[in-house]
Structure formats: C-alpha cells, structure tokens
Length: 187
Image 1: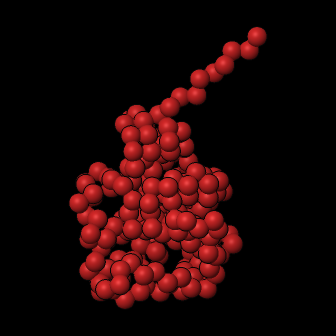
Image 2: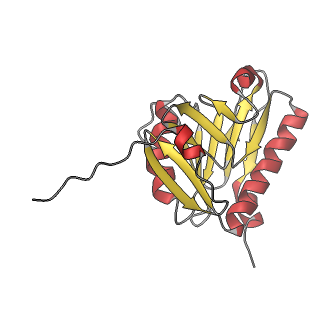
C-alpha cells in the first residue's frame, strides 16, 4: 500500500525565510514556485521598460514603476515578485518599504524558459482573480506582448505597439515594441 504524501501549503512569511540570491521564491495559493536568476536579455528588457515608465512618470507624476525583485502580497499564502509593477498615486497607501499589498495598476512579467508556464498560467490567474487591471506577459522569443485584463478569456497579442492608459487625466503611454525588443538582443 502506497503512502500518500502531503503537499506542503506555504505561507508568504515562510517563503520570505528562504535565502538564496541565485533563486526567486514565490508562493501562489500556498504552492511554492522557485525560479533561477534571469539571463541578460531578460534583464535588458526589464531595464528598458523600467526606463520607459520612469520617464513617463517624470513627465506625468501620477505613479511609480518598481522593478523586481519586489514583493506583491495578495494574501497570507500568495506573494509574488513580478519583473515590474506600476503603482499609481491612488494606490500608494498599500505600498510599504518591504512590499505592495493588493493589486498594483499594472504587472509585467518577462517570460523565460523556466518561468513560461508559471507566468502564463498560475501568475496570470492570480493577478486577474486579485483584480490587477492589466497584466503584460512579454515574450522576447516571439517578440510579442500579451495584454490580459480581468474578464477576458484570451490575451490581446501585440507585436508593434502597446498603448497604456493609466487614468483619464493623464496622456497614454505608447511603447514601440519593435524597438523595445531590438534593445534587448545580445550580439
């Protein structure tokens, strides 16, 4: 007779105790996810997007962009570290020096071989269920951006340009995706 193995149910506090700078530890609905440090093309995309949003907010002071790793906690058993998160001024009360509590205005994940499944399935489901208004999955291999919004059964797939409208009072941010992806290529 085979013995059943209990699957551990982790909390965000437990996962915060794990310490290996080469790995990223996240927990979604109690399930532990561990990913290795990203590659240079991934980090170049993070840097380019961070710069784009930083410049946008310098001209339109309505929020901030925070590059990962920085924690977003949704519940006692769901805390993740997206590649980039955008917090509007109206959400600043949920931002602490250690983490953001609840849904930010925008979450961006740049997928890699090791994170592809988690970013497109578990994290997408978490973000949309928790009320993140917009979730971008950036795929450097396909050179495309998948925009997910709550209530959508499928992503809007963009290859040339993405336009983000944070508030009616601010101008939209337009990002040239062809240029963005060309800036992340390693020769």
